[in-house]
Length: 343
Image 1 (spheres, rainbow, N blue to C red):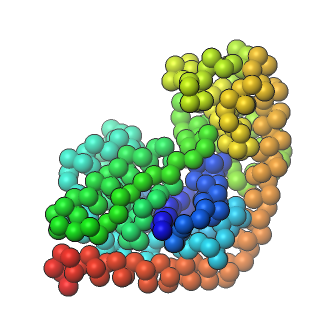
Image 2 (tube, one colour):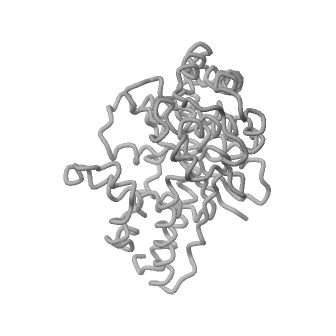
Image 3 (cartoon, rainbow, N blue to C red):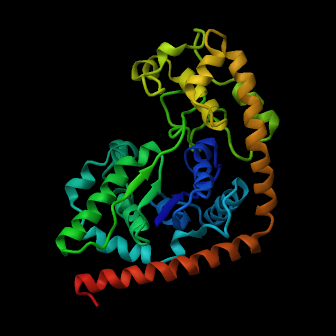
């Protein structure tokens, strides 16, 4: 039986990148058979690798939990909790810090991107972030992890750490970790710059579709979304697997991004989307995309707002989920300590 683990940072202003790249897929996984447990975590310890306003962080944790429910994650089928309530994550992270190697962390490209030229001034937490991610997964001996394309390297590191632990202690304790990467928009890009990932930290609100946006906001943002001067590409833009060729992504990033979003929001293969719109101008694609986003995103946003008004419900939900997660993680931590001679 499979054990699923994944998480979303409570950074506020959740957008369609968070939804299409992660949360939508969590909902789809609920339909699978052969699942023993599914853990969906608000990863608030990851959020504090950069400074967070304490008041805002509390709100964002509840908002992320509300988003899980509004999008369709059933708390009766999945365990929803926030990371900081389960101390086993931090405890196992220290143990895995002693298994992981500096050279492995030095290869993490996301740290280099986030730290930039100021790498000597960023927090140690930002550097060791991938080890905590490994602890998140391995606290529950999860073997399947839904992730965005940008997290694949971190997941490979988690697999390396698990394998080294098993090798060092001649154990078969941790399972093989495998990613689950869904759909057409595992990496949703900015509406203003197709070479940049969609982000809540972007100065322009027109760079993203927020999950709390209303109909008019979505219309205006898609209308102003950057495109290029050419008509929409045809089959020649796709490879044998139905994915856009790297050359096309490089030459026409904004066009590719809009088609990817349309494909993902409709669960429709890119080949079919290209077939529908090839040779047309972008106004036709934008009109259809706007309608799809309004039909899918606006109801989620309305439900999020409704759920957010009931803080007691959200706090109770997180408390219950955290208690269940703690009970399961503690059993694994105890076994790990026994294997290591700590207990």
